[in-house]
Image (cartoon, rainbow over all chains, first blue to last red; front, side, top):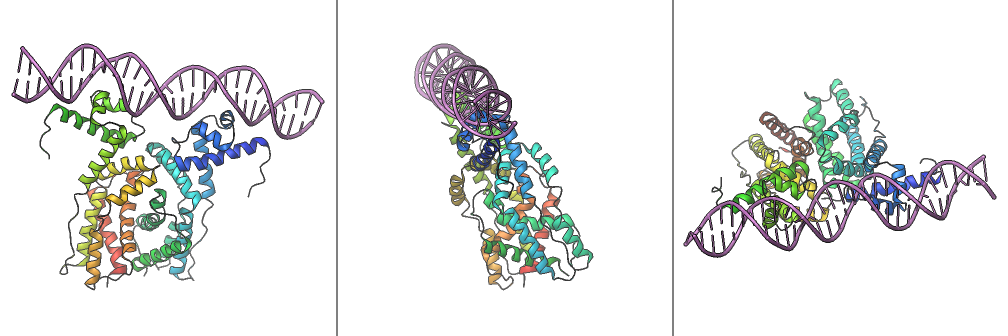
Length: 203
Length: 203
DNA sequence: TGTAAAGTAAACTGAAGAGTGTAATATGCC
DNA sequence: GGCATATTACACTCTTCAGTTTACTTTACA
């Protein structure tokens, strides 16, 4: 993807980040000591501190990096000529692929373990970063304007959809209560959720 | 509710439990030291250890106690004479009241923070304790047998309903991203979820 | 090949926190 | 009052961990 890692310094930095991602996601931020981390990265502890002046800095770096990678966003807009079913299904499937992807779940696990007892900080970050949750919004608004959907409360409806998706393929996986979904299961969820939704809101 | 606390020992024990519930829920198990806890309970640390031989024992005691209180279960069964809408709505409302109740959320927060990096232990406990998740199941099966609902996959459908409810009134509150819902909002969710569901599955 | 920047090992500091031991004190019941 | 039991204060051990210091080595590149 990016150019091969250049200098030794960059290679070390990368090893630290990889190890941290892996360890934080598995044992949590508090469950991973800087000594362990250095060992996992095959790097001296001092080197870790040369790259990241404190544990917190490393955590925040990770969360932001993963978040941006994750936000390589979904592009799909309403098309008046196509059936609702197929359009919405693609949209939901894309959303499902996103939130049940490893990268996303890893991010969520790290962020989660870190912010769970810092709700103020969490709210702040969430506000910053999720302001652009609008693909679904835009599609729904367009379909309504086109007279093919009827609903009064846009936000509620968006939330209904996202509850359905996340309840199936995000929360249980985040808690590791259920294994990740395979492609067929993901498609099923997109299909059935679309059907349920359109039964109620399509005109 | 229960008889007034008798002996001094019982009073102390109770103070410990109250303090732990409050502190664990607010700061997390790892964020609450036994010294702090003792202080909050107005009890010496030694007394804490006289009642609970280790922190872990206290945690497990709390989780189980809260779980049982919470499980004062919903009693409602299918009635062929009444409309589906009103029956299902009551059932969902009861479910909503349960999962957005303070006790339930407190339990969830403690358990959550504790089990987040112990998924095996979590799975085990969840399997033990949530075997009786069957009120909805039973109602849906009865309504289908009565020819008034049509669906193929019972578990999927139950999950659909519970995603909708939890996505609105459990997860966001658990993470403290959104404030607890008031009675009107809870009713709205029950009503709208019922409507969405019946549009698709009622005959 | 010389040198500056980066990395390393290992010992260290300081703080926090789980759990224990003990001797003195309070409570409640006969 | 007397006695068993629970509670208390507090000092103590042991461990873990974030972050630092130091003296030394490796790497890269000019």
